[in-house]
Amino acid sequence: MDAADRLTPAQRAAIDRLMVDYVHAIDEGDYERWPTFFTEDGHYQVTGRDNHARGWVAGMLLCDNRDMMLDRVYSLRQVNVGEPHTYRHVIGPTRVLDVDGEGTVHAQTNYLCVRTLHDGEQRLFSTGRYLDRIVFEGEAARLRRRDVIADSNRIDTLLVIPL
Image 1 (cartoon, rainbow, N blue to C red):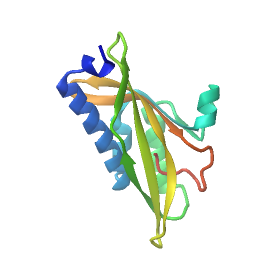
Image 2 (image 1 turned 180 degrees about the vertical axis):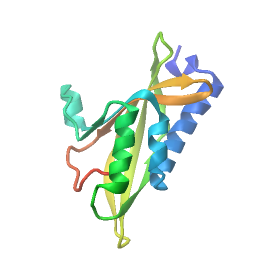
Image 3 (image 1 turned 30 degrees about the vertical axis):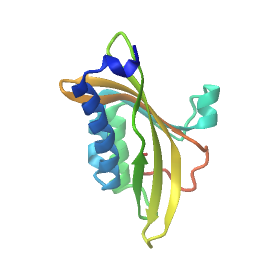
Image 4 (image 1 turned 120 degrees about the vertical axis):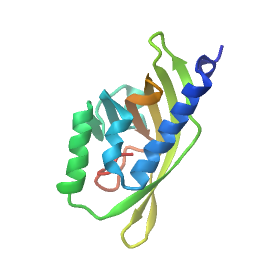
């Protein structure tokens, strides 16, 4: 049996909604919603493909609970000084890799992120994949863990906005 076949249609729809709502909130600048896509003990990390392949835990950004994510949003709004910019994500379909014995869904979604600068210039900012551990809280799918595996270890500017 394929891992995806172990999900109900409602669970699959909740995962799809989670993926779309996640990038939509970031792309529309609704950063305060970003932590709500995670469980209370949610983990978010951005690292490069090479580091991930080697099993190195060093990354470009790490938040290991929702409070750290809230702090990140506060810093983004109140502390960080940087060139104003926005993101636009394009995501692929989510591939369910496994559903473990506790009902946690292990999934992968490819992404592409374009950054638009305040002067209108657009640049490809990052490509890669999300490796997720997804759980269900009632009807809602939540991220227990999101590892953003960027295809490159190089980020050409401060990584302020979550990917």
